[in-house]
Length: 111
Image (cartoon, rainbow, N blue to C red; front, top):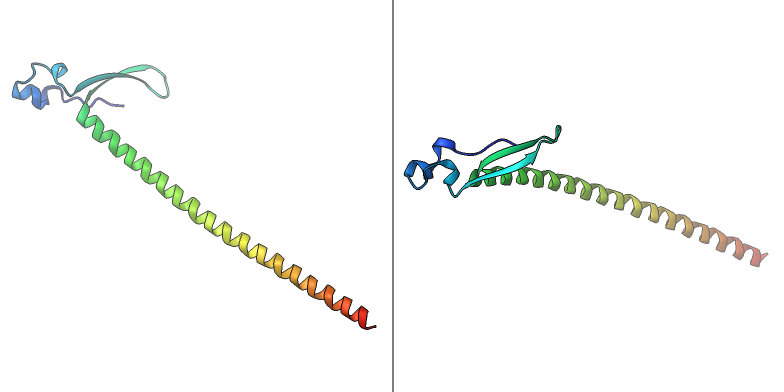
């Protein structure tokens, strides 16, 4: 995670509302652990910038989840169709067996 702080370009500092970036109401420091090394890292952020970056990341992740969900839904629909066809084939087979058994019983009764 990289810093998003404005440093000397902070509009609040430029306008004179704050003397330094650290006095800016949008300035925030947080400690994070780097993923691979686990080393702590100080991240200096301008909160509105960080918020927009995080929202963009979440939006991309949500889009990926939506694509995966659509794929799973398509596969489930396809699988349901296969099961319905299998059940229909089984029912047709059982109906045919009943018909054959009934015909053989009738022929036994006639004889």
